[in-house]
Length: 222
Image 1 (cartoon, rainbow, N blue to C red):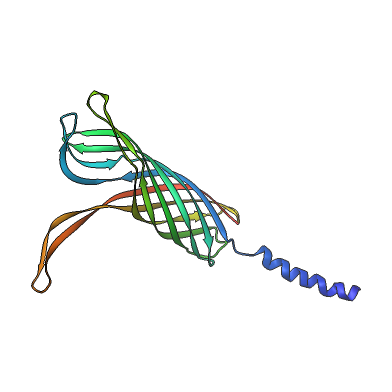
Image 2 (image 1 turned 120 degrees about the horizontal axis):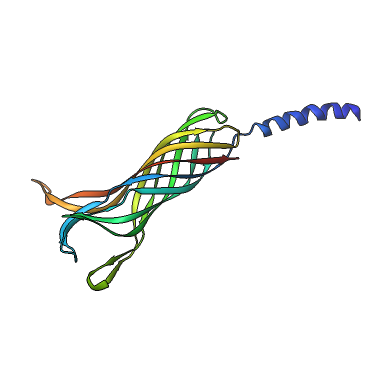
């Protein structure tokens, strides 16, 4: 009996050590920050107030979000993120007018690469993602309190970011970073392109609404 226990004890120790040193597999993050946004231009239109407008933009404002990531390897992480900018739709032209409150929500699947070893205190990272950006419905107030609702719209977008994670402990940390999210809105005709063999066709000029976010928050991994 004692002889058997002499073999079991070292074996149990060998099994327990790798379990304690296992790399984290899941990471949860929450953050808050500030987002600088721009919109798109278009044909000049006269508003109900007599001014002429040719551009709309989301107003720069605060933002916040959440993400969940899964470590495929020690460095490679895939996951999903959501963030929201509590903004206001702004019309620009001969004057600047705040039209209506508007939320801008981003939904992206992402791929991230974390530099260094799994249990390093400081880990820089880069990420890229694909998904959609959703602009909430807005209500426009016209002359005589007449209102017109513009329904919400979702558009294809990508997101690109970098930053650094700092882990005071094995499972808890903080992070700070920045992200750029370009969202495709429309394509305007920019002229004609002609080829002696293939003929002529209209050349388009794509317009994107961009968000530049600076954020910081907490991270929990296990």
